[in-house]
Each structure stands twice: as structure tokens, then as C-alpha cells.
Image (cartoon, rainbow, N blue to C red; front, side, top):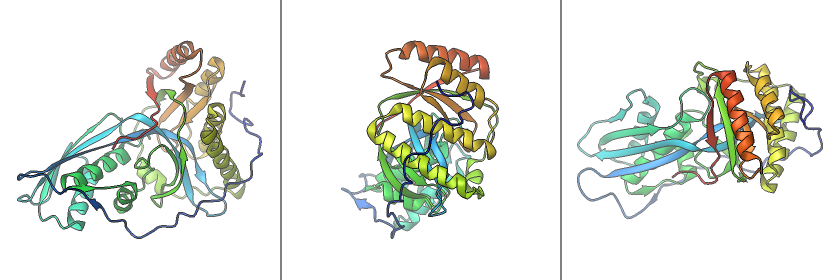
Length: 330
């Protein structure tokens, strides 16, 4: 059993993880495929997953950089872009998706397309909760625009364009990654996990996650050293398929984040996880979502998921089941 407050669940053992050498590079070129579709209005479609908050979010002691570790889920965003050589500018639906429109216009300009187009976005993620709805929108948009132009945009190319729009969290890369979100730069591809269910709740309200992630966090050196240790642990745990250790790291990260963005339901959600013998709790560090992690392979999965959902719904008024995804949408 883990203590209800999440403190002390992980004793420091592993040496801090040295950052991989992933210095920014020149913008990668988009690979041209067969060319735009025939006809006056070539159309491209793209999609991208969200992430249920983060398994870990903090800052390194050595590079002095903020980072996060993603938890991709099977809900996300889909974009359909129809290019119009005769159009001036890009229209977008829903109309408030200004960043996605700006991204589409930026790509059209950079790749020499003389017209505009229409962008249609569909999403399964609530906005302003910390589930990467904006990052999913933008990644899906980049893929859709590229395909409408007869191009293929890989993760590095998508990253290059998003860096000019806003901080983002690595959903353009497959699997779980550690990511320098303020720099919009991959730290390391970590791997994938056996399937997880997240019994999620949210505390209400909307958070400007972009603004939150732009603000310096003023971590102490002791906090940064602990975050480096947690990063080493979660990297080792993901690669070893150790779901229990992943849950412990996520819980500790949630507790450490209370100084920056307190969550009124965190202690109760940790208690639910402990009582049903789940893996731990993951949170949206910059948002309002919290979730209990349960392994789909657990022999008592049905009981644990049902009990956790019932208790979480009583606590927050509603609970939603999310599921991890091993491969991203594209």
C-alpha cells in the first residue's frame, strides 16, 4: 500500500539520467510524395492523439530545462484541410481555432502555395483541461495541410512548425517521450507501455495551459535533482514494462506539482487508487484533470475499474474512462 499523501513512495536509488544529445537542428524538409491530388481542391486529412496530462513534469538540474513525459491516449483530434488556389487566406471551423489557422497559413507560405484553403477540425478532447487538445489540433493540422499539398510531414517537421506557434508536448512522436515543452524539442523517445485505463475526473474551470507552461517555475536544486531521478526511474520503468513503478513516479510527480497548481481532489484520488490497489494517479500538471491508473492486464481489472469509477464519480460528479494508446494517430 502507498501512503495516502503520495510522499515517500520512491526512495532515491537510480543515478540521474544524462540528457540525450538532441540539440536543435535546421528545419527538416517535408518529403514530397506523388504530388497534390488532381482537381481544383486537393484535400488532406491528419490526426493526432491527446495525452492524459503527464506521467511526469518537472525540470532538470544540469540543463536547467523544463520537461514532461507524455501519456498518450486513444482520444485526439482530426483535421481535414482543403486547399484552394483561388482563395486568399485560410478559414477554419470551429472559428475559435486561431492557432490552427495560423499554422496552416504558415505552412502554405513556407512551401510556396499561392492560395489558401479551409480547415475543419474535429476533437474528442475537452479544451483547457490539460489533455493536449491544442497540441493534438496543431499536429493534426500540420499533417492535413502537408497531405493536401502532396507532402509527408514527419515528427521533426511538425515540431519545426509548432515551435513557431506555441509550447507543445510531443504528441507528434510515437509512444511515450520525454519532451522539452517550452523549447518544443524532443528529449528522448522512451517506448510504449502495456495497455492502461485511466479513470479520469476533472475539477472544473479552464486553464490556459500555454500560459502556464511559459511561466518559469523557480524549482529548487533539490527539486530538480529529484525530478532527474524520477525521469531516470520512469524511463527505466517504461522500457521494462513496470507499470507499478510508472504509477509510483506519476503519483510522486502529482504531489510535487501541488506547489505550482494545487488540485483539491488529489488526496482523495490517491486514496481511491490505494484502496482499490491501482497503480497510482496521473494528473494534468498544467490543467484540471486527474486519473487513477489501472493495468488492463490486471486479473481484477473489471472490479478495480468499476469501483474506482464509482468512487471517482461520487467525488467529482462524473468520471470518464480513458485508455492509453501504443501508436499515435497520423
